[in-house]
Length: 338
Image 1 (tube, helix red, strand yellow):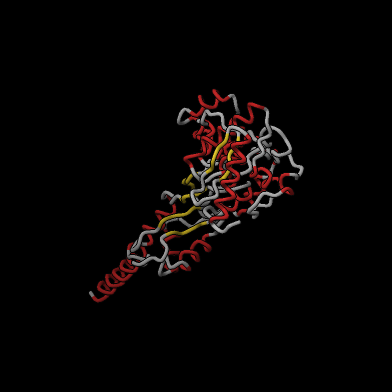
Image 2 (cartoon, helix red, strand yellow):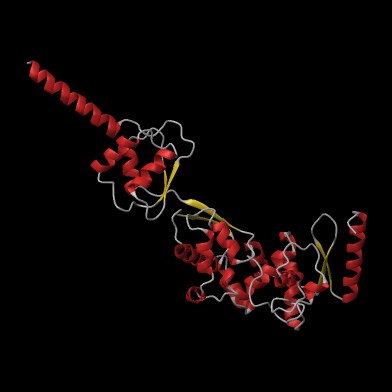
């Protein structure tokens, strides 16, 4: 009887130990961050260290043991960003890491001037670093494969918030953006509007990027787009200040001077007729739609009001334009800015 009792006791101890390792909570009740990030090519040891370092498991040894029992351990672990629930057991956590759905990240893209800025923003949300992304964006063969040139490539990016997996590769990111670009142009009757304008997507986006830099007020974007459309139809120089700024890359300037407008560059619309070779910035959806639905009027000129509204005055003749310029200067003097 004594031997039987000892065997039963040993079995109970082993069973309890097994239960504790497998089913007892090993994830803390309070989590400072509920996500684990497993990069591509991670080893099992690296995953365990990451879980413990970020206080997502309390006991490394029991997790490692159960991982072996459940055949989770691999030479190269499944990558991704996974949400962890408090009080999970080793079994719960391993099942989730092995076959659970990744937790998506929200990638916010806006206010970018060039592809390197897009790379920097995207790298804030996904595992790929900005340099690797930017190097892909500079690959002319890859850009051509997607249907763009180095000058028009930024027109592929539509400012928005996108859900992506954290371990998205640079190629996957670019291809997703291309798909989102196609979806955008298929919505809201934009394809028909584009055809009516007899312009390419890249041309509309390029003009929209100029409108984007001319005003922050959505209420007047269609009117400004109309001014530039009138100039294009008349064969006039666009003479858009933002293009001269982009040509010189003097993005910190507060005033456009002769050195900007006289800088020889195909992007400088003070020197070269028509649209520049490509966008001068990422264009917002409101600016793109403003070009597609530009206001039909006879204005040829516009000038900032110089007040705090951020709006512009418009003129049909050069005489009206000079009057608006004088109003602008007067408003600046009244505000003590000139």
